[in-house]
Structures are given as C-alpha cells and as structure tokens.
Length: 461
View 1 (cartoon, helix red, strand yellow):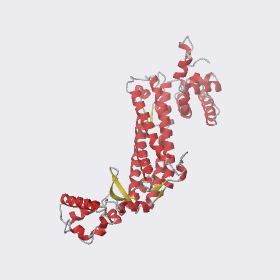
View 2 (tube, helix red, strand yellow):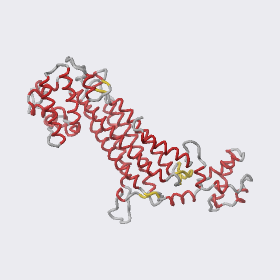
View 3 (spheres, rainbow, N blue to C red):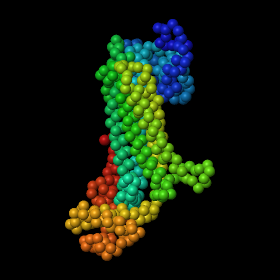
View 4 (cartoon, helix red, strand yellow):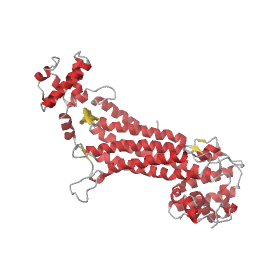
C-alpha cells in the first residue's frame, strides 16, 4: 500500500526504518481519543463551510462505525501506516471512499497527536483521582476503628513517642490528599486545545479553533501554534505528580512490610495479598507492598526519560516527541494498578492492638513526658532534659522501664517528682496529653478524622 504522504518520495521506506519509526504498537491506545478529536474537527470544518455538509455527515458516519469496531476489538492496525492517525484515516477511506481524505483538511498529525494526548490524559487523570479516593476511604475505615489504638511513633527508626495508630494512618491520607489536589490542579493545563495549530504555523483555512475546543470540552486553546504542537509540559507535570504519588505509596508500603514482619508483628496482611515460598513452607511474604515499593523506580524513570528527551529540542515538532507516549501509558497503568491493590489491602489488614501496646509499654518513649512534667514544675526544660536522660540511663543499667522505677528512685534525681508521675507515664495518658492542634491526642485525632471525611466528601474543591 502506498503511504498517505508518499507523493514527494521516489523510493519505498526501508523496512527497518518503517519498523523503527512506527508508533502504532503503542499509540493504538489513543484510538478512541483520535476518533473523538476527528469528530470534533470535521464538525468544525462543516460549521465553517470548509467542506460540504453531506461530506461531514458521511465522515461522521464512517468515524462512528470505526469507533464501534475499535470498541468491539474488530480492527487490526498496520505498521505500514505508522501511527494511530494514519491507521484511522486509512480505515476511514476504506469505509467511505475518497471523501474520507477530506478529514485532514486544516490540521496536521502534529496538532492531532497533541490533541489525542490531552484527551487521553484528561480522562486518565480523573480516573486516578477517583482511585486515590478509594485508598483514602480505606485509610479512614481503618482509622475510625483505631483512634485509641496505641503504637510507637518512630524517628530515625528508633522508638520516639507513643501515638494513635489512626493518627499514623491519617498522615498518609493527607499525603494522598495533596496528590489528589495536584492532579486536580493539573487538569487546568491539560484542558487546553492544540487542535487547529497545524504542523507549526496554523492553517490557511478559515477554521474556528474555539468551536472544536468547545466540542471536545476543552477550557481554552493554545494561543501560540508553535507551543501548541511542541508542548509536553502537561505530560511532564503528570509524570512529576505521579512520581510524588508513587513515593507516598512506597513509603506506606515500606511500613506495611515492616509492620507485618516477625520483628514488629503490628499488622497481618490478608492472605489474598501475600504469597508463599517455594522452599520454606512457613513463609508468608508481603509481595504486594514490596512490588508497589519496587514499581516506584519505573515511574521515576519515565519522568527522567521524558525530561531528557525534551531538554534539547528546538521548536516545533521533532520525531523525538514520539518518545512521550510509552512512559505516559506505563505510568498510568502502574498508578492505576497500584492504587487498585492498595485500597483493599489496607481495608482487609488485621491490626494487632495488643502487640502495639506491648511495644509502647516496653520502651522509653514516654521519657519526653517526664521532661515536660519537670518543666511544668518550673524546672527549665534543658535542665529537665538532662535529668531525664540520667534517669533513662539509670533504668537501662538496672534493666527497668520508666514505669518500673519507684517514686524513691525518681526522687533521687529530683525532689519535684510526686506520686502522680505514674499516671503521667501511662501510654494512654501520654498520647491523650498531646492535645495541640494536629497532635496525636485522641480528641485531636477525632477532629482530624472528621476533617478528612469532610475532605473526601468534597470531590472537587
């Protein structure tokens, strides 16, 4: 078959070149978006009187027929036609005859592919926002049950202070909320229409770019045709947000791996999200969170790959830009798959309250409360800090925890200690006392939980 652009050439394309430069193996994912953009474009051509109304109707009928075949998996794509645009145009001409060739009036593959990607990424961004919401709902479901479940909070992976487990989980809710807001904000830049920018300089035909933009639900059009066909910032922004989102998923996954280990035993993941060992029958491996953690690298790689592709490109369109799609598709699929697994894994995990409480009862994470206690008695905090440091050292040397020491032992270090010190040191009281806004105190966690629920109910701020 001759190329649709072949009039200028005297030789057939080298088969290796044809295979190397073709993008149809991956950009066929844009088939529905390509047809959607073409339907809007032909409507505009008819509205502006550029092609006759009867041709518009014939082209629309042909495109609609091809769309149905795509949806029913009844089409096959050809490498010889290079990309999704030429494949669809070839199908259209075969479907309705030479009139199908009028569809490309007033546009180029350059503005066409950019339009397709705007449409694709707009749809996928909205779906990913919804998938984030499902993970947030799972977090809230667990948090509601564990406001007064206490576990050690860590800094430097060393036990620091007792906290509410709900408080710990909700930290991830707010990370995801920021991810969601970033995605929502990015829609403003995704929702620009490049259609009608032509190859780089616009067109001689009297087109109406605002008309086709409105048909496609875009909020505005690119005011510069060079920028319209060469801009990939909207994809970079998506990949950047995706990288931050995957980093958050990876951090939570790391916690799940640690918490489900024999060393921690804070949670148990449902069997349906774990696998066994081929040689060790006792093993229950947290493969899903491990793989979520591992897939973060490929998302980072897709971002760096596109940044590197774009960094040296002059205006306007260059074939290098063909490299913008595979990383975008891969990131969308990786994110969607990760979020779809993360939500039910959180929802179904078993929280081992007793083990968590045992951990905070057998450490020195209530030491800060001793220092605060002495500061409340009028002792400067730095002096109180030093006193408590010596008390902790004494307890370690005598194989005791702070609740094991007698009042007399405390008074050997400071006469400010009273009998109430033992109530202060109880893990539940230690957590409840941190009642500053955003703190882990139970009443503050309840306030935070209500705020999180309110945020979740408000889909688009």
